[in-house]
Length: 134
Image (cartoon, rainbow, N blue to C red; front, top):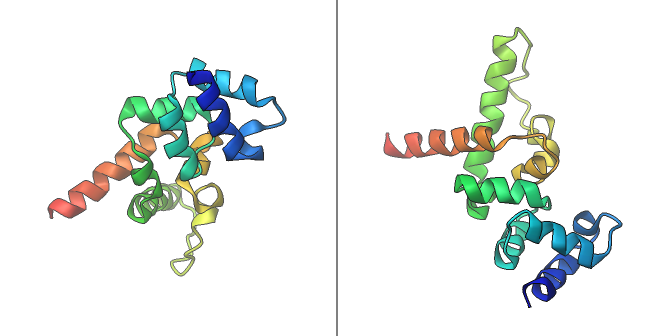
């Protein structure tokens, strides 16, 4: 029953999720990664299409809502800009194109593409929480 449910979930995810594979094979990959159909559905809804990325996010406690939060994206972008400045790169302060700093300006996509790590997202979530406490 779980495999059948996961097949329905991955079919609903479209080409990014299927990647040319059969729905059954893709669904089994998600299950093998330890992801439930409900988790897959929730993370796919925000654009996270990689089962190993989702498994890592779930294990770290990163929710789909956190991935979709503009403030968390802003914190990741800010940290990357700060690192670039520290390396001596010149940053245009008027450049507000997040896609320059995070794949397609989307954390969920960036994690799926392995361009952004879970640790980086956890640091951004902590930075946002620190701002909220101030």
